[in-house]
Length: 231
Image (cartoon, rainbow, N blue to C red; front, side, top):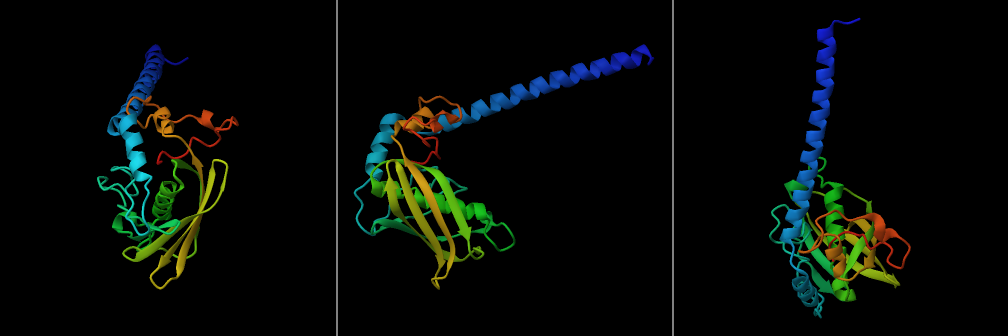
């Protein structure tokens, strides 16, 4: 039998570990709630968002520079210091952008990280709802990387709507260098939503500062509404 002092030390260690674990859980929970509240406070109220969407939805003439999704958008927001600052123009029934990836987007040396390419493609797709005339969110995104996308090289990225099926909007895009060599292609499915979708998921002031839940995937005629919060 171990000495009593060793037993007491082991019991004390177990109690201390349990108390530390509870404290860390409370800290992580508080930090998560604080982060969602910060995001919630940064977003406009519903009236502002409705007016903003009405402005963004056009009409936009062919060749027009399209307004960003919002100022903090990772893809196109001018006020996001970590963003791509994508500038998108309407071209016929589609959209187009010329973009140069920089050192922030490196994966392998000199090569753009695939996630950065996917981010820009997803964001470019997010401008097509301006032409469709209703907000929509990403349900599915596929990228085929045909050749390395290089840092410091200018690429032309073009996207268009290929078809629609009820609330589903099917879109496709290409990434090409200025020798017109295609280096990546992408397809995606977007789901049309109403503006209140963003309030339900805490993206608008007054919404609940909690993460999106999976309930919107239920087969109730609102399938897939839990997409990315872009609009």
